[in-house]
Amino acid sequence: MAPLTVREVMVTDLVTFSPETDVVRAVETLLAHRISGAPVVDAEGRFLGVFSEKCAMQVLLDAAYERLPTLAVRAFMDADAQTIGPSTHLLSIAQVFLLSPYRRLPVVENGRLLGQVSRRDVLKV
Image (tube, rainbow, N blue to C red; front, side, top):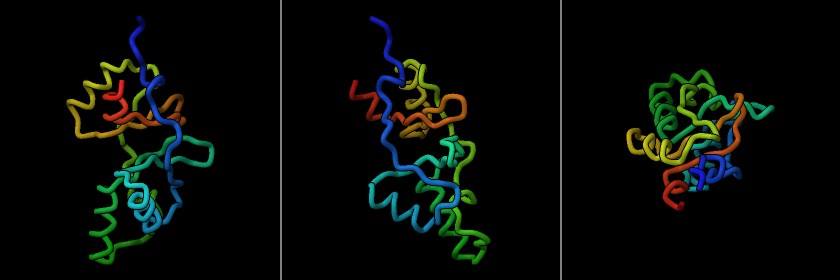
């Protein structure tokens, strides 16, 4: 039996944001969908980063100090968010989840967002 890969367990029906999404709308979306973060992609589906609850905390702090030059998600997203490829073996991703604070990771191939895999997705297998 061949080892399972991320491609076989990833979720492809995702909430995503464009870089121009208003941060207030993005926070409302996270709360409405009861998720802690969502990928940010451009019009061609290229992965740009992640907007998360942690990013939203920065919005709150900047608003408190009136330093909001823009309300676009691009200004607050994590552009250095860790990603994984679709052919990553499930045991490798389990180790990443064990050794990092991430709960879910975007699955990216050739710069394009394919889906997302979470700790829960790995545990379901």
